[in-house]
Image (cartoon, rainbow, N blue to C red; front, side, top):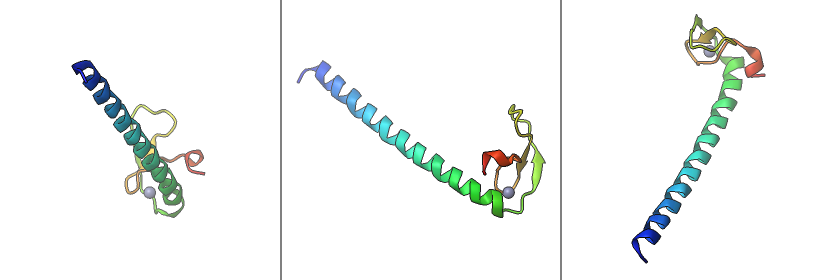
Length: 74
Ligand SMILES: [Zn+2]
């Protein structure tokens, strides 16, 4: 195996790692969404104003982090 073959193999392993990590991120984001739907119903929200550039929702719960916009969670 020459140097180029080794580089190509290394690149393929890195791409496989990226795919695995992207899958992990996707699964964890899905778990967060499921949790947020439950928190939307169950948390005693403490709404605070936020200014994060998102015009859709200007309030966020300081306890659980959901935004004050039911359509995101129902
Ligand atoms: Zn809350």
